[in-house]
Length: 421
Image 1 (tube, rainbow, N blue to C red):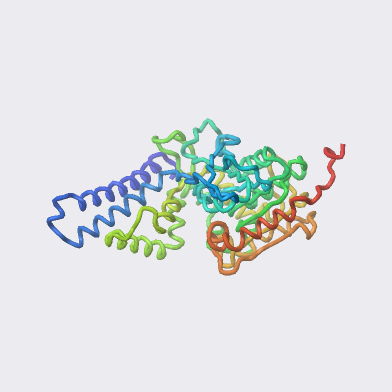
Image 2: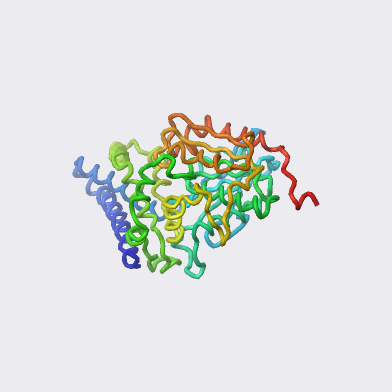
């Protein structure tokens, strides 16, 4: 599988399906066809419209689409996305609300690198902007990163987070969503031991696999079922000639999307069939619920092969973070060194990706943290997506997270050698 020809073949299949959709749509809308009223032509045009849009979205990075926000003064303020730190594999960006006094809360939202762009957290960002200065880790598509940039694995990811936290300062409140939760916990412990004055104020871990064995799911079962050799042979490809990262070993986003779709194939099939019917009846809209969801869901990015493989091996198979044996840059990171960063975990009762029990395990690892600085929340009836972007997040979880941040905003830090001097 590790050949550019395989990558290009997969991209060719996607491109062909997009072309077939565009062709069907064009043929059905040809003026002469109006003289031959036939339901099949209407259905063909509807299928073509849905197919073209769906396959096209798979290679397009979505826009954040956050142009303005209504603030407490009742006025709409423009939002400018500023790059605070630029690195080879990801940037630190800031959603700067113009002509607004700087908010006391400073939030670093750590986006997952799991096949989707950081824009998957768009609704999360929108919900936080009115009440905080929001910063986001904006990971780059590996196919666009030249081979000369080198490798990027879980240790590099952790060190990126360390750099971002260090740059934002000790009053930062970090929120890690799903995949980055264990690495964000490790990054915080890394700072606690080496640069305690650079630690964040609070750390909120949402639906992350801190201990994947605590509550097995289809995701963890897959990780334990296959060997690393099988995984590398079946999942890793070299970027094709169309992209700047030509020759780079990656786990293609299209393969990840296939896995996502297969997990709920019946539901996705029903959603697309219903959308085709809506288009044929003239009931669909450019930004209806289906298109809003799938424009984001289908937009996938490639992951560096070494990051994907090291995540499976070290986080899921070996459970290095769960066993507190994770090593960064040759040194073990001891989670127990976190002593004054308030930690909160959030889980969804119906999360089928990071099931309840996996994330709350972080609190047991924080042996040096007093119970007064630990908190957890289990959201009834919420699935994986709902705990950070759905109704459960907006109505229940977001207020709890903000209250947690405020409750620890003025708590004193333990004296360190640096600030004691």
